[in-house]
Image (cartoon, rainbow, N blue to C red):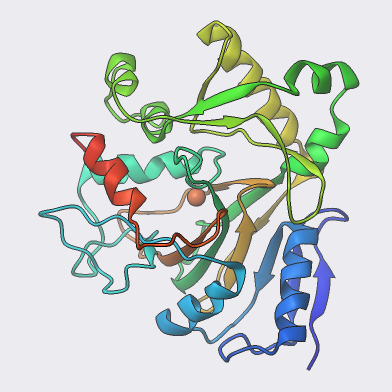
Length: 303
Ligand SMILES: [Fe+2]
């Protein structure tokens, strides 16, 4: 069968079907999926039938699959290092009750791009639903290419060469996690251009969102006000849509041309089991590396 593409917004988001992604793909199918992903930025696959193993195997068509962090003394639910646990479950599969961990995860309710706090940026995230709550828990997506294109010319010129500092701990603080500005200052930051060319499409995009802490060379408050203005602009109704999940559904978003945020649900009573693989923007390293673990170890106290 050939790939069927059903756009969600005219310039952003599409539902894809017609290809069995649980099996190895031939070159034309692989190329068609990558082309659709580059064109639409976010793609939705329903009832995929993917397992942990076939989820990881399919992810590799996009490039190097990142390893999730492993911290000493902590237990993890998944044996596969390629799976980031985006659930509300502990290592035994029970609903998390640890308030600090819940608070840490609550930062994902802010508009963000995965891993923008890393020097090595992430491109695609592939989020597969294993269990969904009966209500809530959708993911919202925002189109940072079209938003950039629609900005007034004066704003495009103002932001063209700006650099942004990103910190995971800044978005956690904004979600209520108890960290001072000074404590965040002492932890790792990454620095990225505010505007970049999205390699897969050749279109320019904003690269902002919740981890973006300040703008290099601008007073902190002025930089934050500009970041907030751009995020507000890019999340207007014409740039956003949401996806709700049933088990087996998967969404693939390109962090380099979109933002996303989770929606509320009854997280202390209802299970939501989502597992994510993430593709690094850069090519696979020559030797195995583990930058997420390194970042958390360099950050000191974590939830
Ligand atoms: Fe995310």
